Amino acid sequence: MKISLVEPKTPGYNFYTWIIKHMPLLGAIYLGTILKNEGHDVTIYNENLKKVDYSKIKDSDILGISIMTSTAPRGYQIAENFRLLNPKGKIIIGGCHATFLPQEAAQYADHVVTGEGELVISDLVNNGGERIIRGKPVENLDELPFPDFSLIEGFKFKKPMRITPISTSRGCPYECSFCSVSPMFGRRYRFRTVDSVIAELSRFKLKHIFFYDDNFAANKETTKELLARMIELRMTPGWTAQVRADIAKDEELVKLMAKANCQRLCIGFESMNPESLKQYNKKQTPEDVTKCIKVLHKYGIKVHGMFISEGYSDIYNRLGLDSLQLSILTPILGSKLYTAIKDARSFIVEKYPTDWKLFDGLHVVHLPDNLSPFELQKQTLQVLKKFYSRASIVKMFLKGRLGDFYVRWLGYSLIKKWESQNKDYLAKLKQIRTFEKSSPAGRPDTLKLF
Image (cartoon, rainbow, N blue to C red):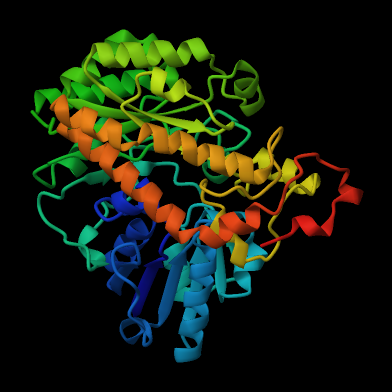
């Protein structure tokens, strides 16, 4: 059976649009590898690498599309185009957006898979099934096949890869109000064994590793065991991972990370405002943030700080961050925040599914507290422009920090491209001047501008 799997293109410019060219998402690759191992003819099309060529997919028996909220409009467009070209072909849609809005996704597909799809995809492809199929959590992650990156059309698959992505766990016990990881993957952590992770990494000569886990150090003892094995096997090319600020409380682990050649940690600090941290249910303090940065720098590990914008602030330049990711607070489907914003009728967008493309963490899509939507957007851009300014680029170059020089230049370039792409959006956003939240019954229609 000929199967084409598509990862739709992200709608705008951000760090992700650069990273994805070297480090594709794993969801479709796991599914494609499972189906290939069963004898199917599988090709994965990642539009962040190369736009879908319909002449190559139109005769597919099955088209699978994985969508996030911001890529849902493009995913639906691909499904409709395929349907016109091949009315007999079956369309399957999955991913986090389809998980939380399966009825919407079902308007464009023969089948919608919610949650994790690895344990249901084979039966669905071979035997068909209901319109909406609930996926099953993979309890033993070691049973998943190692992802076959050669299935990706247009991906310059080399050994070694420039960046080797790997996932060692799923789930998250925390319930941050803005996050949907727990609703998507469950609150219980599931971990791969160290032997399994090492076996996957051993397939290639490694240039750089990126651990996709939402919290790479969730099980500190397992992480220590993995790092010790990597050091023993000299499997330490340089690597990046996502962790929480509490990593600094275990300095033994941080020291081991440095010894294993950890180059950068991406950390969701979110805010330096104690009240905001409580509102987000982060279970951390501003002191945790500053201590974390200090401890990591002590061992030579760079810090990519991820924050939620609360308007203009110079705090990010004073924290000593090596790189900054400043996002607009976005009500992600499946999160408690989304439910609260929806109940309060505070969204300023309403043309769904088209407006889902704005739910990417870079656009204001609801009425924020204390600022107008335009002011929040403008002040967020001001912060990013200051951090990724020309002066900061020159400063990094003169200090001989060429890696940081490139990151600052990249940030500067992407901000310029984003502003150029979003001129109409900014003009419309400027028309919303009030930040006063009326009652749901009194929400004026004039707020709906997009």
